[in-house]
Length: 338
Image (cartoon, rainbow, N blue to C red):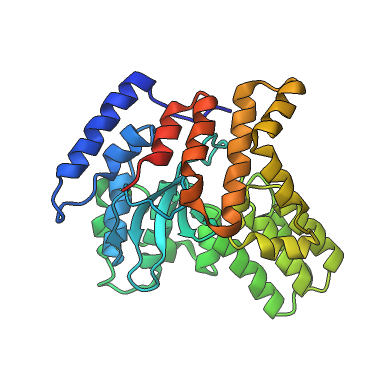
């Protein structure tokens, strides 16, 4: 599957140059131009909820971060804001080849990759508006005011209270969308109450590939849940399934999941071999087309970088792989940092 919303290379290059020039001339008090970056540097379609999301994050107390400040970050992340309480970084994820329904997810960034927060900006905004409304405090209206007319179309104040929902989590799942942390909280609550079967059913449903395609975190959590329930063999299988996903989507370190899966260093060594010229030649001999080989090598390189968080060390080689895959815009995006 090709990445969505890629601009023609000549036009994208011209617009990207203008975007970078504009950003370099901006004052320190002006907000970074995320809209321009997303369209002209990341090569994505215009995002109608982006300004609403940025305003909401500021209303939450976050500090807006320039989209160019990407050194040390997972190369596919577009930073939005830093939480002033815990230091976490909220970002957009620029999938190379996004699955349906996962074009531009909202994530938080950590050393080994990213953790999914919402499958889209719209779902994330909708959720935060519901959470604010659920407090029942008349003065807690800053999120709703911040998102403007576009964001306010997602949710009408009072809908949560009028729904008669038994809990906020249930409302979110039924009316807003599927969220990883909600799944995890529901499963753990069942486990704490001694409802082991309900907990395991929730964990298995969470790990259904249709909910969060491309992300390994649901399988990691399911493995951890099974382990807590004393089901070691099933936990081991779930961990192995998690490791079939990109390692930067596990939500934790590769070593932790590999330990649950009973893996040694063999898989890491295999990936190191695959990103070499010898590995490329072996795939060519098998009849693979060069573009697909380059995409595979890029995926392997991202996995290897996720093991120790060596993102900046991999940028140039990663960009080279994407150029070989005829994804010039993505290659330029990878290396565009301050």
